[in-house]
Length: 97
Image (tube, rainbow, N blue to C red):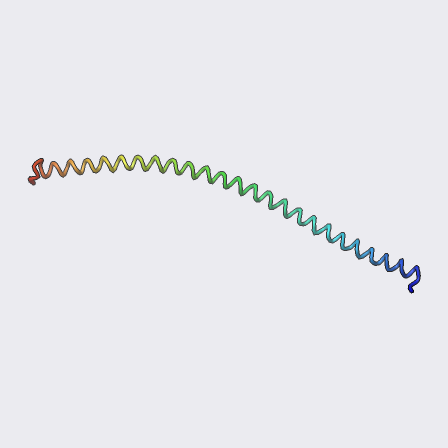
């Protein structure tokens, strides 16, 4: 059996290893906290950007709808002008001039 001094020395060595491992664990946890914090900031920034883009898309859709309505009006007017020109060229009874 080991002497009391040998046993105490072995315990001190084990304690030093445990303290070293705990120190490494603390450093790893600190690094992880920094990374998590950075990721949270990034996610918040991305959410803000996505919100801005969503609003911009809504505005673009509204503008596109307005332009589509105007284009439909222009097409209707052009079709009416083409019909009138065709009527004028062929005459009311369908006879060409």
